[in-house]
Length: 227
Image (cartoon, rainbow, N blue to C red; front, side, top):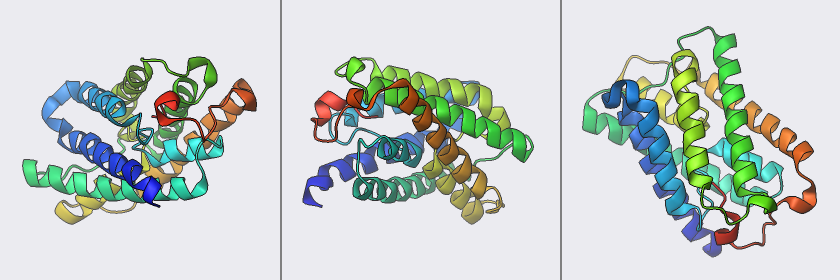
């Protein structure tokens, strides 16, 4: 566990800052998805060499599925990601005075499909730029990941809320339930959608990339660049 401490602290700090930006992003209006993507890009570059900068339980699940991290690491990351997400949305409410919830504007079928599709895209980008030997050591991994999330938020935000991250779903819905008039009824959408997308992205990457081309768990964090 001592070896995990710097990684868990990095996951907590990066998730907290990233999700605080999400919680305050309404102030950016139409440019909110850009602010979110830029925040993620910055935090990925901040923590990629330490923890892999997942900041998302769906990303951690994909890296576990591809055997880049083990189950203990995944579960520990999930714990700090969710805790950081809850605290980030509480802070966002404290700063803004508004409950920053997450809401699907479309029916559940369209919203679920959007969450699955764009989480799949995110996971595919992460696995290909951060966990594959052929791209190891690149300097564009943070940009690629941030742009992917920003793009998804621009086009899927009006449909599903553009979450793609269970920590955002939990933090946002809890904040809305405590400080606003929200309910827990849509929580399943923001758990099932991202995790299904993560599984699908991992399966596609399995076909794309031979096991020999996966960056092994024992490789250095600086070489792996695991967002």
